[in-house]
Image (cartoon, rainbow over all chains, first blue to last red; front, top):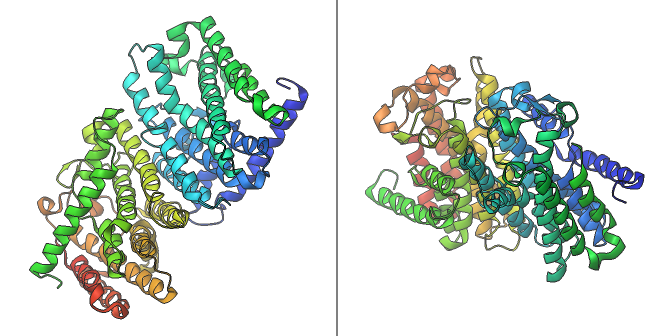
Length: 295
Length: 295
């Protein structure tokens, strides 16, 4: 159902459900501190593809669980993602003015508030996740915290900082992305599976490999879009990575080989889902969407 | 045992044990990303009174638990505290060059790395806490996350931002500090009690009130030290709050009434500990230390 109307409809349905979940989990703007809560909602509810939250929900559903079981995990991964974007956009990092077609959080609310928005969203992620209806929510927290911290996403950002202006090998580039974006995508899938009560090591390993592949494919597509995308469709500044002299897949492999690599990763991701049969149709289509998306 | 040699010896012993715990819980500098891990250790291990970690351990010990039970909680509250200092020192917040007598994290490692240090320390706090040897570590995570987020410490920072240059009432000032520093101090005591298996609501409530009082007293003492302290003894710039036109207890109450208020809070804190008898001697002495400290 990759590019079909059915997939688009299900994706849009998931996005709407995730938006409602996030809206419920965020503090209301009527609760003080008003400006901080307003800025947190601005940073989270302003759009986005919701890939991570949808992965958590769809993975759990593919294993037979109800969406409610995955709601805390879905919100938690999205809060972590949102906080990382807010901090990543700050002047001391990428210094971006535009995100999803609107001013970045620090452009709209000031740097100090944006810093606190990120900090508070991270705390909210763990608070929300620790309410998950499972027997051991501590296990979920350990998975997400490791994926977010210095051995995961934040570590990937640090590797990224060290890599600016350097020539990386493909292995080094993949290592960076496995941390920077891959760790949270893998955590999203694993949390979805754990919330669904999955315990079969083979299924968990296959889902993890699926997530690893789509995480890398997602990044390759991002790098390609940074070169050939259109600022208006992207909702962020086209060519930003190139301007910052950041190593990318196209700069290491070339454009054609980057596209081929993304499609090979999609193939490998698809194979992992075989034992789940039709129940994994949406996860399969999501992988296809990731390597073909236009924004 | 307030100012006695015995108290000083126990405090110093606790500080040594906490330092060893933090050292164990932090990633080694030999593990990549090297610079991030080096900076995280710099931010955490560079000193500090360790009041929050000691509160967690001492509270648990006063209830009969072994220090090991509280080790994850002690590290977690100290990591949250350390991350908040790193972010608070950034140019977009207080723009401080000096912390504990040495360059602040961003002065030593750059702003981008300091931002990531704070982010990664917050994740490490929750990862560490979720390893606590209790039946429901999710409960601990909820306590710490709420105390750290927009309804706790980060919210207090936001209130602080909104208060610069304004005249606050005593109630408004207390509300700010109950969030900014009080929430994490209360969480430290509560986590210590929960790790010790405390379930008696009266004891939990009394310990919470003890923590509320010493948290406020701690802040009042901080404000007083900012006026009459000495930059060399403080290890940070004396007069910084006044220079930033931040509302303080002395600016609202005057110096003498601020001192009297701190001592009244210490009295009230002491009363809460009565049912614990001699087991709470150290907690009692810690409260006295907080209102009398010179740095």
